[in-house]
Length: 67
Length: 233
Image (cartoon, rainbow over all chains, first blue to last red; front, side):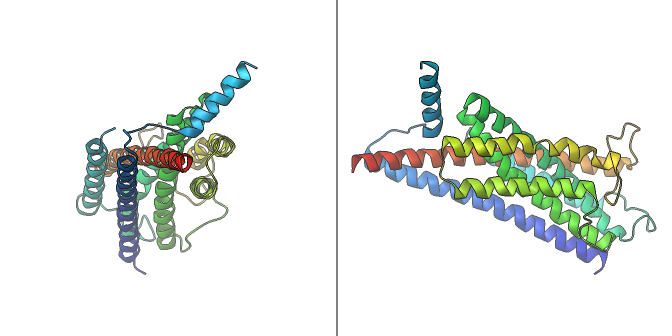
């Protein structure tokens, strides 16, 4: 292949790659937001902020510290 | 952080990347015809170097996130770990992809197993792949996070090693043309396009890291809500 052909393949591959990556990320975010909205509405809950594993880990550390 | 800010970073970064390509093709001078086997393919450099730069930023984020989780049990640290691994994988693959295509054009082979820079960077990208796939295949838990954070912490050793590789062992990968300590060998117009590329990729990767952190937060909320539903059943 000529140099320009290599260049075209590389750039088309990468532009397509970052477009798909960005699209996937946004689609995931939108999908999750819709699911959360639906669940919270059905449960009648306000927005919650939670990382249950971090809470669990902090609790476990506290338990160890207090013996 | 607000959606508009995340979209702003991604949009600005993307426009900057496209401008870099345009300037690289239309404005930056070409290399001398006898300087390379494939002078046209040299223009891949305007994508390859900034994407490698963005990969190093992503791996630094992975390292900081891993340390924050491992030592401080910080939820933000875990989100940074995930975002750093995903961004490191994407930018690492872009760097490897552009590098192998240039290698095919210039060297006649896409990969040289004896070159230190190629192999250490390849290992870094594989580490990011392991962290991304590993997290998706394992149930979330303290032990899982500790294990992946340890890989994030120790894997970072490869970053300075990769950076200095072409300064110590010039085997196949070209030596540094910027930040050489002697002013570099790059034409000023080429250096300007490269700088625009590096800034654009930095903005773009920040946008992706912020978005990825937002997604992890949403996933954790879904999980928490799911548990509440299970408890109430």
